[in-house]
Image 1 (tube, rainbow, N blue to C red):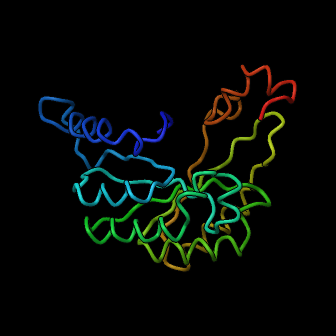
Image 2 (image 1 turned 60 degrees about the vertical axis):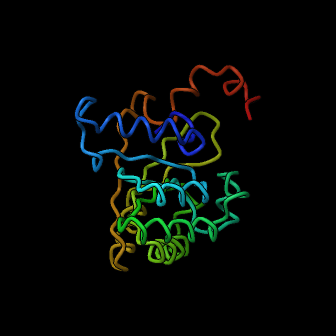
Image 3 (image 1 turned 45 degrees about the vertical axis):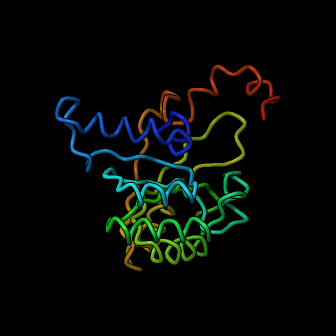
Length: 195
């Protein structure tokens, strides 16, 4: 995670996973390896065809195209419907679930309607959900969902049969949590000229 899109570097991703799990490599169980993708439908199908042994996580963050297009431009070429077809193929071929990574953004994707959309989408593809706390950055567009609202979102998913957990952020108090470090050293962001 955090090193670019692995499914656009497919051969090296597969070779790395094999090496990490090889006896003469690190000897790590493939079940302890997770590859995280922004979602490239044709490559998810290829993972299934190639019998990928590692776990797959998809950065979802919204379960409708309008919202996902806004925060994840890759969705314009890999719509949620296309991803769903590929993920269903993956889960049925390999007989394993996928994990959805879902950053909660206050007032954007953390409402009851968003939770309902996520339940429907996750149910269709046999996915569990990691709800991720957003780490605010200076001048950022989004805010952090209140803890009580995050817990209500998670409990709704649980009641509907979707395994969901909230991943607590660490390092936020010193601006060292995921997504915060780059902001501190980018002069364009400090002056408001960043994109």
